[in-house]
Image (cartoon, rainbow, N blue to C red):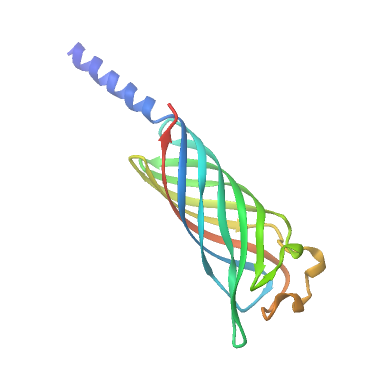
Amino acid sequence: MKKLMMIAALMVATLTASAQGPFIKPMAGGTLTTFTGTDVDDLKMRFGFVGGVELGYQFGKHFALTGGALYTMQGARVSNDYTKYNINFDYINVPIMAAFYPVEGFGIKAGAQFGFLTRAKWGDNDFKDYVKKTDFSIPVGLSYEFEETSIDLRYNIGLSNILKERVEGDRSRFYGANIDGEIKNCVLMLTIGYKIALY
């Protein structure tokens, strides 16, 4: 009986140890993105790519913290009776997330994200002079993990007006898109990642 109890205690200790500690998670997937704002018409969602890595620490079975760097293709698609083209805004996003696991394998996530603009193309036109270099958003999402594989669905709620003040209200700058006032990033992303324990 004592031997059985010792074996059970060792198994529990092993499982607890394996469920916590630092990890790295390469991840990649796709995005559906557009803009929201005070007066935005003629915009459709566009498909893009997201990829990067997150570093995290697992605190037991129910809580984890992560910080990452993700290259994210964002923007929108302009589509009306007169024109069709893509708006391509690319960012290096740095999400800082807390994850809660109410049951094994299922995670609820939320945090804050800082974005740094790397490219801004409005159709064939370079648009970086008219877009702010930084962006702030609130990412929320769900994840499902089995063994070392993680599937992550995340929605980034944009809080920053991404246009510089000198182009707000100037519709001629938008090459056929009916946009006025503030616009904010709106990003839905689905990724698959692989968690690698660091010790």
